[in-house]
Length: 467
Image 1 (cartoon, rainbow, N blue to C red):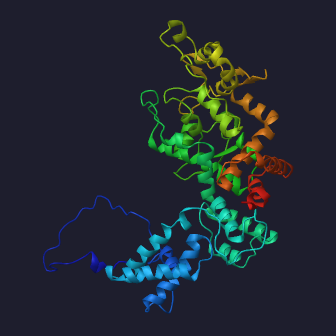
Image 2: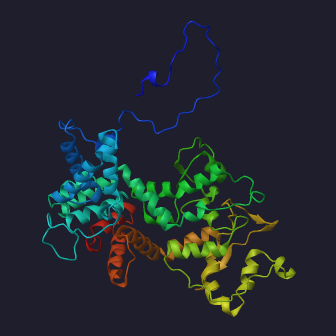
Image 3: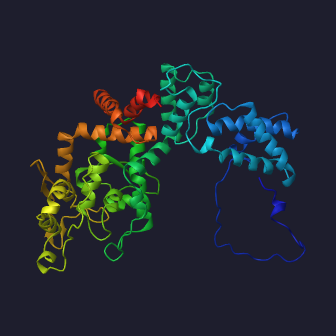
């Protein structure tokens, strides 16, 4: 805690006291409960040798480098950094300043920046060349479940060559999922899976939607992440991503949805009813808004997003020289959006792709550019009915959800398995991985479709344990 003498000094205590009116006081965090903070003490560890700088530098490096490089380090590697410290010490006022520079070189090393094969000879387990050793397995677990480096417990198990043992591995997966650091998995995976960067750069026309503000945009970004986190914590069914009777809202987003009784900025679980016209990912305002043009809905964007993100069935790229919708044509200008899309589909070059995309996107038409429910457009009733390419008729969002839950459960489960496995491995999946993905998807269906169950099955799979 800073000493008051560092920032308060009385120049003349005998003069008459002045009068100060304080308008407001602003404290900028982070606010630490202790000083130095815990993060500092995890690096500059307590030691009886702190007075011997060279010996203490060695201890700090031996503690820090294995955590940063996610493996055992050799004596030569530690000595190299210790010599660097010795050469730099005179350039700095104290030990910690010099060590910070040395530790920065540890973090600038490819050993920290890249996930590489463990080239050290020590602590190698004589297992299949295609399997991860214990340190590599600890790294993969931490990067997947925590989006971070392994903690000391994982490193200790890897050092003892016990992490690959099935019972210990299963215990560690459950421990990591229960840790609050698993919230990073929710944030990082959802941002990639659902393309949330589109929402980051979203530009909404203030004339068309004056109620859109930064607080609403922030809440829109938070909802899908908080929803995934809630699903993971409670092992909810994967099918709740298609439709659920709850979501997570704060006061601003609840106002946007017309949900009463929600106060404050914190996202919390809220029960939904049919009158809210919400539930699952498909009706979350942020995902609807990022797939609009900022003025109105955009069925093409929404249809492509559904096919790519939720069904892993992206449409082919458009052919060259595709004609755009001619809004200068008075006949086309008078058409509804759905009619324009159907007219555009009459072009032979457009028909094959749009027949696959448009019906999905039209089902979203009851939601405007910022994801608000609407019953009419320009005083005309919304027509959100469409005919899928397989001649299955769906009517609006309810019809779309019913169809997905009735006919596409397996496809959605496999798609999410594929996306999560890609994230877990940190590489694109190949044709050789298909059988593993099929098996994991089939297993999670047999075991109740839980999200945490799916993640656990991915971790236990041969795919996850292989190089």
